[in-house]
Image 1: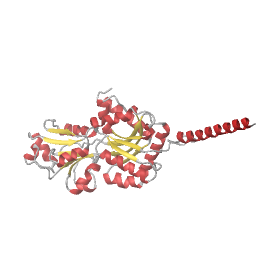
Image 2: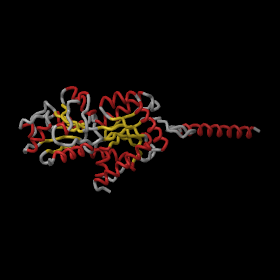
Image 3: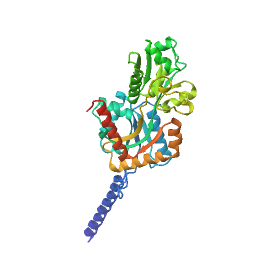
Image 4: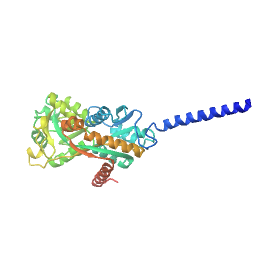
Length: 348
C-alpha cells in the first residue's frame, strides 16, 4: 500500500511539472504575439535601420515616427532604437535587412525611400521583392542651398561668384568657371542630372560630389567645399533658421512657403522648364517578417500618419506632402515604381 501511495504521489508530481512546463512554454510562444488570436504584439526592443547618417532627412523621418509610436503607446511599451548603417552607401544595411532570417525579422524596420531603391537596383541584386513594404508615409522634394559664410575654396567662390544667385552660377559655368554641387545619393543624383540636362550643361562645367547623406553634404557646404548643396527641407531648415544656409532654388514646380519662400523655381530665373524629382518616403521590413507582424506595423504606421504630431511636427514643419499608403497599396506602388525605373534605365 505504501509503495502504491508513493507511486501515485510521484505520478502526480510528474503531471504537475508537465503542466507547469506546458504553461511556461505557452507563455514563451506568446512572446511575439497572442497565441489565441494569432496577432503580433511586440515584447522586446525594435531595431529601426536607417541607411543614412544622423541628422539627414531619412534619419529625421525615422526618429520622428519612432517618437510618435513610443509616445502614443503603439508598441506595447517597447523601445525603438534607430541604427544608422551607412556602409557601402547604405547597401550593407539594406542587404542585412533583406537577408534577415525569421525571429528578429518581426522586430526590424527599415527606412526605404525612392532614393534608396534607385542605387540598390542599379548596383545590387536586391529588389523590392526582397523586402516587405509596410507603408509609404509622405512625398518630399528638394531645393538648392548656398552657404553665405563658406570659405573661398572653389573656383566659383574664388572668382567672386554670387552664391545667392543661381542664375549667376549658371552663367559662370557657361563661361568656363567650374561650379560644384554637393548632395546625397539616389534621388539627389537624379535631380542633379535632370537639372544639368535642362540647363544644357555638362559635368565638367557643373560637377557633383556624392556624400553618404544630406547631413554630410551640408557639412561640406558649411566648410566651403561645395558651392551649392541639394537638400530636402527637413535636413536644411534648421540651418536656414540659423542663417548658415540660404535657399536659392526650388527644385519643384512651385515655390515653397515659410522660410524657403524666397527661393525661385528654375523657370523663374531663365528660359527653362522646372525640374523636380518627387521622393516617396516609406518603411520596409525583412522578407522573413511574419504576416501578423506586417499587419501590426502597417496599422501602427497608419496611426502615425493620422496623428496630429505627424502633420504638425513633420509634414507641415518640413513641407512634405501627405501620402500614406498601407502595406498592400505601398507594395503595389513600389513594385510599379521599380519596374518603371528599371525599364527607363535599361536595367533587368
